[in-house]
Amino acid sequence: MSMIQYIHQADPKNEEVKQCWSATDCETFQVRGNNYLEDRIKISSQSSCLQLVNVDLVQRQGSSFDIPHQRISWQKWSFVQRLHTKYRNADQPVTDAPFILVINHMIPGGMNVVLHFRVPNQTQEYGNSTAVKMLRQFMSKEVDDDYRDSKLKIIPTVVEGGWIVKRGVGNKPAIIGTLFWFVIVIVFSN
Image (cartoon, rainbow, N blue to C red; front, side, top):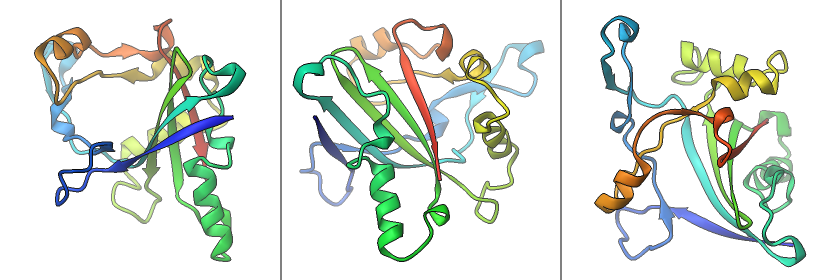
């Protein structure tokens, strides 16, 4: 048994909404420039090719309350299953649903922060970009989990928060597979 708390997208017209999320400005992130290996200069990131479409906060209940969910997208209350149901109810094939990249941050204590990103198809903006082509290859069956673990990076950044929190989190990139304290589950759904 699980309790899911839907975190709504921030509404700039209604500041009273307390539990919300919003996509951050990608230029906040510093990434390697074209000549980084020679000059060690980082530059502001370009805009994201993925669209953040949903965020869920999940607290597990019951006898396994302290163990986070590993297969969030398989739960009937999950965003992915609700999206599939929406397509089925509209008499559209589920395969027509957008391709969703699900990043499940499993936090000790039975919490999950689940991010859902829409991957553009080839007819949409960025759909034929090098980044999206590389992402599709990265998500394909041709690539194994060991490869993914050795390549996927997280760039932690606190956009809004106190100085102590920002300083504590930092902004140094880290490869996910080398972090023992950070578990991430990636689900590819269509």
